[in-house]
Length: 201
Image 1: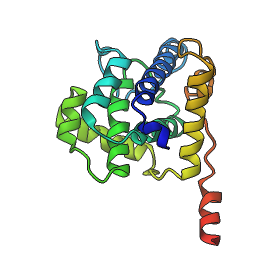
Image 2: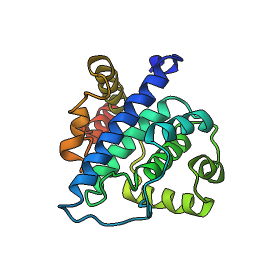
Image 3: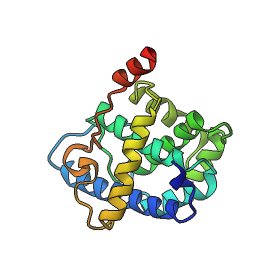
Image 4: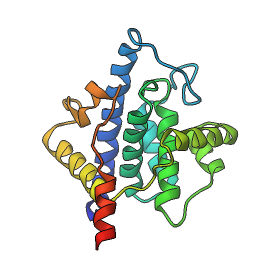
């Protein structure tokens, strides 16, 4: 989407995404007291001192990936949450999930991208940890990395609509996030029908 290339859009998108992820993490932090959750390589021992917004801004500043990578990373987080319901996004894992999803999106989408060691420095973790996170994330996604144009457009349209209609602090329903992600961001991607359409053409 050409709108993502506009210099004014990305800061708004980063702010909106970070606000959305912050609300999801806080909601799941409360839910973890009542529902058992498993721990994974994404789970930190303590909450990182850097806010989600500052972390996402840091990734945006240093990763030099295309703006579409942030939308694709969001798609990946949605898929991960749907496939891994016992690993809801929370304050202890959101930062590692973010850096990993953006890195994987950049590797899949962009012709030029930085290596894992660089992303590890941007994310404030070791290269070995970044490698483990990438492998676990890929298996968590079932290696389902392709994002169809329809899916990309659906996520972009949703984000555009939400950014226009609701200030980030007031958006309650965002991708049905609070209710179902243990935060399933919950778009129903019908990849198979899209693939059938492509084969028929």
